[in-house]
Length: 195
Image (cartoon, rainbow, N blue to C red; front, top):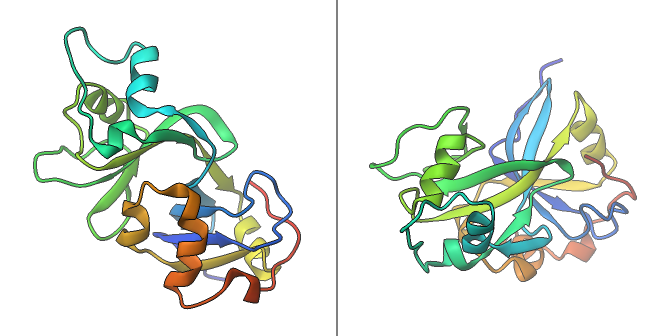
């Protein structure tokens, strides 16, 4: 049986998902096929501002002053409970940027990667102008996400650059439902989701 890919797209958590890792979350789905799925929680727990994380990780070269743009002053977030030591950049493509290893195409000129070259470019202030930085990711094994969707744990929706472009994570879940013309509480969800 063929699996229709939901990526790129978003997963909106049901109001009563029952999993603290994903309560009231919006997941950007970067990969989905018969082998499983991978994404990042856009409104996951805040860590530290991106500028500070890069500095404390000694990734900023001496003499480099990072920009004070929203992408650098916004907090890095927990992208999911899988491999929380991994770092991911979800970014808007620009003509000056190279293609990074292992990029996930996200439509409308966006991409995601965990490539060291991309992280280092961001730490030099030479990477994309607009990006989100995530620690870890959300992952599902073969058939797992499909089962959770069938049980009502997630509502899959089409990719939207407007949802991705916001740094206002606290209102993202409500905004995502409103963008569909729906109330999250009209959506009857199941009690369990997982990563």
